[in-house]
Image 1 (cartoon, rainbow, N blue to C red):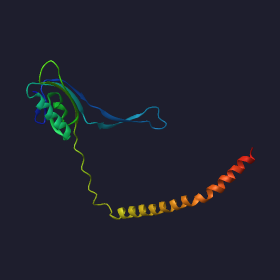
Image 2: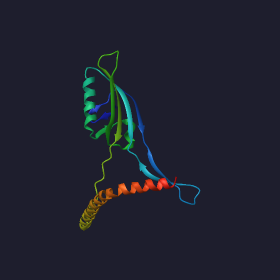
Image 3: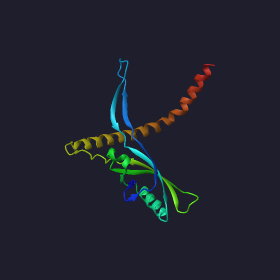
Image 4: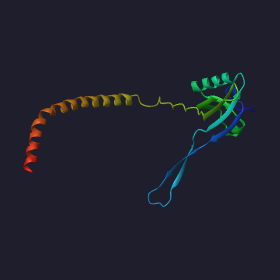
Length: 176
């Protein structure tokens, strides 16, 4: 069976390489000689595959593949090599293709696919107090009023620049 990406059969696939990475956090407790590892799960799986498409419909195949890449939507992907990985949908991270010399209508393609994981829906926040937003808005308004006063303070110091510069010059001359 050929690998399938959405409704496209990926012909003459020469190589498929899968990448799976686990996320581990190392903690070094104070006063202990060793460290502890915390398993944070795994990153989305990814795979790279390359193949060749030959024939009069080769350019149309590349254009379809490029269209799927440009939309950026998650696509169903089926291949024997990842059947046990329980990956349902993939996103095309990268697509490279080139016309091969020597035979007409012959294109090589390289696909980098990343597992699509459905984002988690936000939790229900209706139980939170609505007054919190009003309090936060009031604090921001007070902060902005304070910043306006700070601008007046900074411009009010300009009249002291001349006398302080003269005083600094006299102190430096006295130390020589």
